[in-house]
Length: 287
Image (cartoon, rainbow, N blue to C red):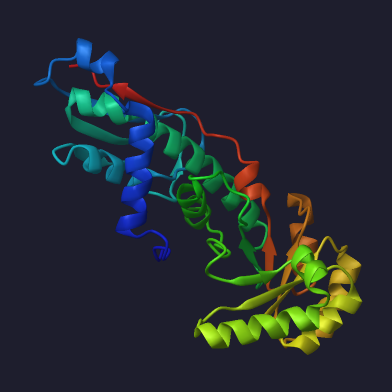
């Protein structure tokens, strides 16, 4: 898997620094008071639920960021199937370091594995079609880097990462502005003036708005909360002039029928906001 652009060293270090600071602050006093500084131990990442594993690389980065001397032996990689009882990796080194990073590693991996597992399940229903499954910005504040990464690991495609890397003119933008035509023209002028390379997507709620979005020259048209019949008509109207995206209340059982309409993308907030955590634990390896 090609690593997404948002996974920069700076972004990862910022996320890990802030997360550790939130948890440790003045000190991990439970560990500092009971575990000798020189004690070397090992711990295994135990899989307690069948899943598509995600967050292994994130765990490695967390461990190494906190303590560069920690050693990690990996047995299951990101995106691979893991079964109950499997050991994903073993980390060895300072017992204090292992204990102080344990919860952050588990929080990331449990959530990421849940999202990757759900994404893999949904994406498998699109096999044999040209339609790609997208996530949305319906993510947990300050945890987006993990959630978007998990979607990619699970086989989905990331939509825009934030407000800065794509122009999306949604219903409120259009209602505030006055019309799709006016909003798209202003967006195009803005992009040209600022010398930006950004696609312009327009949300449409009916076939009249689809027609207006086509004429305005949008790069992608979102077909919001349309039934399959209306979506089929919309895709025929577009006729390849731009990309199309089905969105709004997407259900797993509808994916195949939606893909048959010929839409380019299907976006679903459920991938990130409704995935359940996978049960994983970091257990001491007894000598």
